[in-house]
Image 1 (cartoon, rainbow, N blue to C red):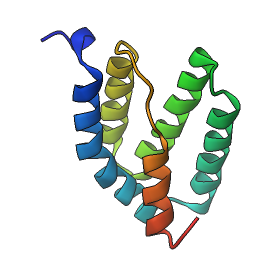
Image 2 (cartoon, rainbow, N blue to C red; image 1 turned 120 degrees about the horizontal axis):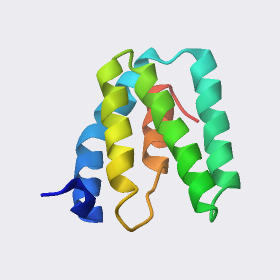
Image 3 (cartoon, rainbow, N blue to C red; image 1 turned 90 degrees about the horizontal axis):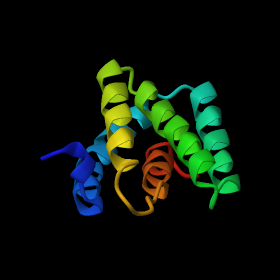
Image 4 (cartoon, rainbow, N blue to C red; image 1 turned 45 degrees about the vertical axis):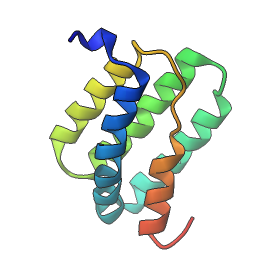
Length: 109
């Protein structure tokens, strides 16, 4: 199968399998500075809702911050690949799941 033919359902399945683990690792290892950067990236995404290219760039930064917070460079490659695949599929993506997991692991919002 060509990655350009990945469906939204397929992308969602992978995200649901991978994101909780990556988010959990990031929450345990994230520095206060990276947490502030993550909050700023969420604000940036909120400001860019409806501005697809700008929103996607902000989302890529958000996911990159979480991946880099794990301390495992391979997660960065996974995130970059996933974003590339997702950009070819139609649909909207809910980025709130990772923030929720991070908040719960750190003891609240």
